[in-house]
Image (cartoon, rainbow, N blue to C red):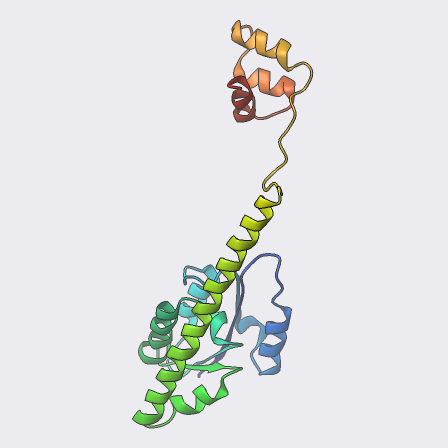
Length: 195
């Protein structure tokens, strides 16, 4: 008996999958058949995506909210589409591109049109990803030019650092003990000793 699965993806842990999951449930996908990842779409090395691929059987249906939820790399997305539809014999339904569903079930000409649309939409998904990366780099560069500091705030050396450093250099205490007395990690202590 064929099953309907849903695949949901957001790019970061901070983002929420609620909207996509609600859409899957509304489309009739059972909660236990929804696979979800909180990882970038730049490749398909995602744990729940792999689990979903193992679960798919010929005659099943896979629902995704939009083509960029499957992936953002144009060529990898097209490869995965072919693996799912041709090798696994599973029908893909893209909720915001319902015309693809109709084209998959048509004759050779209809499938060709579907492939062309898939290439175009995958290309735009990849283009959008590249734009996001460019905007992030530009934003970071602009922030650095304004003097914004990134990363963790540097830890200031405690007052007792000089006394502990003296003991450490005299080999009276170990690196581990010196770091512990200062309340910092060994790498931090060693970095301070070089300054």
